Image (cartoon, rainbow, N blue to C red; front, side, top):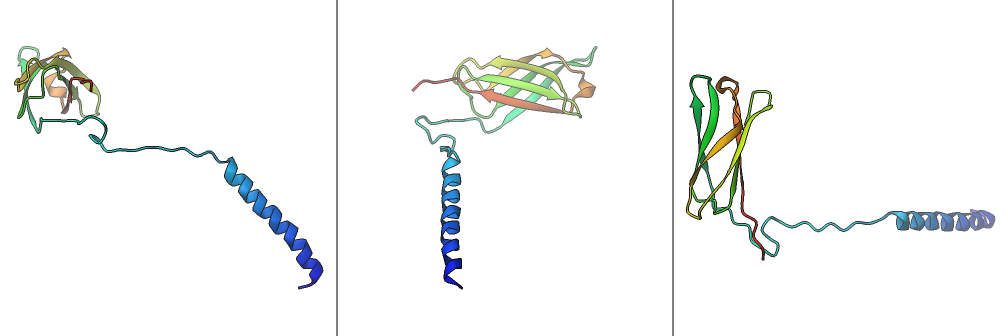
Length: 135
Protein backbone atom coordinates (compact mmCIF):
# COMPACT_ATOMS: atom_id res chain seq x y z
CA UNK A 1 0.00 0.00 0.00
CA UNK A 2 1.26 3.43 -0.80
CA UNK A 3 1.94 6.05 1.74
CA UNK A 4 -0.71 8.39 0.29
CA UNK A 5 -3.40 5.70 0.63
CA UNK A 6 -2.49 5.20 4.31
CA UNK A 7 -2.87 8.94 4.93
CA UNK A 8 -6.38 8.83 3.45
CA UNK A 9 -7.47 5.84 5.60
CA UNK A 10 -6.47 7.37 8.95
CA UNK A 11 -9.02 10.26 8.84
CA UNK A 12 -11.67 7.91 7.46
CA UNK A 13 -11.14 5.40 10.31
CA UNK A 14 -11.14 8.22 12.88
CA UNK A 15 -14.44 9.57 11.48
CA UNK A 16 -15.98 6.10 11.63
CA UNK A 17 -14.95 5.61 15.29
CA UNK A 18 -16.33 9.04 16.25
CA UNK A 19 -19.63 8.29 14.48
CA UNK A 20 -20.01 5.00 16.38
CA UNK A 21 -19.24 6.64 19.73
CA UNK A 22 -21.71 9.44 19.01
CA UNK A 23 -24.45 6.98 18.10
CA UNK A 24 -23.84 4.96 21.26
CA UNK A 25 -24.13 8.06 23.44
CA UNK A 26 -27.37 9.14 21.74
CA UNK A 27 -29.27 5.98 22.78
CA UNK A 28 -31.02 6.42 26.16
CA UNK A 29 -30.71 3.69 28.77
CA UNK A 30 -33.38 2.48 31.17
CA UNK A 31 -32.90 0.56 34.36
CA UNK A 32 -35.68 -1.89 35.24
CA UNK A 33 -35.69 -3.62 38.59
CA UNK A 34 -37.57 -6.92 38.59
CA UNK A 35 -38.28 -8.97 41.70
CA UNK A 36 -40.18 -12.11 42.49
CA UNK A 37 -43.55 -11.92 44.22
CA UNK A 38 -43.02 -11.87 47.98
CA UNK A 39 -39.40 -10.67 47.72
CA UNK A 40 -40.16 -7.05 48.62
CA UNK A 41 -40.45 -5.49 52.05
CA UNK A 42 -43.59 -7.45 52.92
CA UNK A 43 -44.53 -11.08 52.49
CA UNK A 44 -47.50 -12.24 50.44
CA UNK A 45 -49.29 -15.13 52.12
CA UNK A 46 -52.00 -17.08 50.35
CA UNK A 47 -53.43 -19.83 52.52
CA UNK A 48 -56.01 -20.95 49.92
CA UNK A 49 -54.98 -23.98 47.90
CA UNK A 50 -58.29 -24.98 46.31
CA UNK A 51 -61.97 -24.09 46.19
CA UNK A 52 -65.23 -25.88 45.40
CA UNK A 53 -68.00 -24.05 43.53
CA UNK A 54 -71.70 -24.95 43.74
CA UNK A 55 -74.38 -23.13 41.74
CA UNK A 56 -77.76 -22.11 43.19
CA UNK A 57 -80.38 -22.29 40.41
CA UNK A 58 -83.89 -20.92 40.05
CA UNK A 59 -85.40 -24.00 38.36
CA UNK A 60 -88.47 -22.19 37.02
CA UNK A 61 -86.31 -19.78 34.96
CA UNK A 62 -83.09 -21.87 34.72
CA UNK A 63 -81.11 -18.84 35.93
CA UNK A 64 -78.09 -19.12 38.24
CA UNK A 65 -78.87 -16.78 41.14
CA UNK A 66 -75.81 -17.25 43.34
CA UNK A 67 -72.67 -19.32 43.79
CA UNK A 68 -71.52 -21.07 46.98
CA UNK A 69 -67.72 -21.10 47.26
CA UNK A 70 -65.96 -23.34 49.80
CA UNK A 71 -62.20 -23.01 50.36
CA UNK A 72 -59.79 -25.58 51.80
CA UNK A 73 -58.33 -22.81 54.02
CA UNK A 74 -59.77 -19.50 55.24
CA UNK A 75 -58.77 -16.65 52.89
CA UNK A 76 -58.84 -14.15 55.77
CA UNK A 77 -61.15 -11.47 57.10
CA UNK A 78 -61.90 -8.76 54.54
CA UNK A 79 -60.93 -10.83 51.49
CA UNK A 80 -63.18 -10.25 48.48
CA UNK A 81 -64.35 -13.24 46.42
CA UNK A 82 -65.17 -12.38 42.81
CA UNK A 83 -67.03 -14.82 40.53
CA UNK A 84 -67.17 -14.44 36.74
CA UNK A 85 -69.19 -16.85 34.56
CA UNK A 86 -68.51 -17.15 30.81
CA UNK A 87 -70.17 -18.83 27.85
CA UNK A 88 -68.42 -20.96 25.19
CA UNK A 89 -67.21 -17.88 23.27
CA UNK A 90 -65.59 -16.41 26.44
CA UNK A 91 -68.28 -13.73 26.78
CA UNK A 92 -68.99 -12.67 30.36
CA UNK A 93 -72.59 -13.63 31.15
CA UNK A 94 -72.68 -13.56 34.97
CA UNK A 95 -70.78 -11.91 37.81
CA UNK A 96 -70.87 -11.08 41.47
CA UNK A 97 -68.72 -10.59 44.55
CA UNK A 98 -68.84 -11.05 48.31
CA UNK A 99 -66.60 -10.12 51.22
CA UNK A 100 -65.33 -12.73 53.69
CA UNK A 101 -66.23 -11.91 57.28
CA UNK A 102 -63.99 -13.49 59.91
CA UNK A 103 -60.52 -15.03 59.93
CA UNK A 104 -61.79 -18.62 60.12
CA UNK A 105 -64.55 -18.40 57.48
CA UNK A 106 -63.97 -20.98 54.75
CA UNK A 107 -67.16 -20.53 52.69
CA UNK A 108 -69.19 -17.69 51.22
CA UNK A 109 -72.27 -17.27 49.04
CA UNK A 110 -71.78 -14.86 46.15
CA UNK A 111 -75.01 -13.31 44.84
CA UNK A 112 -74.83 -12.68 41.11
CA UNK A 113 -75.66 -9.17 39.90
CA UNK A 114 -76.01 -10.60 36.39
CA UNK A 115 -77.76 -13.97 36.43
CA UNK A 116 -76.85 -16.21 33.49
CA UNK A 117 -78.95 -18.93 31.91
CA UNK A 118 -77.83 -22.34 33.12
CA UNK A 119 -77.71 -23.72 29.57
CA UNK A 120 -75.40 -20.90 28.35
CA UNK A 121 -72.69 -21.44 30.99
CA UNK A 122 -69.34 -22.89 30.00
CA UNK A 123 -66.74 -21.98 32.66
CA UNK A 124 -66.27 -19.93 35.81
CA UNK A 125 -63.42 -17.72 36.99
CA UNK A 126 -62.88 -17.29 40.71
CA UNK A 127 -60.66 -14.48 42.07
CA UNK A 128 -59.82 -13.92 45.73
CA UNK A 129 -58.53 -10.45 46.55
CA UNK A 130 -56.87 -10.29 49.96
CA UNK A 131 -57.29 -7.45 52.40
CA UNK A 132 -54.73 -4.67 51.97
CA UNK A 133 -52.27 -4.48 54.85
CA UNK A 134 -49.91 -1.68 55.74
CA UNK A 135 -46.34 -2.26 56.91
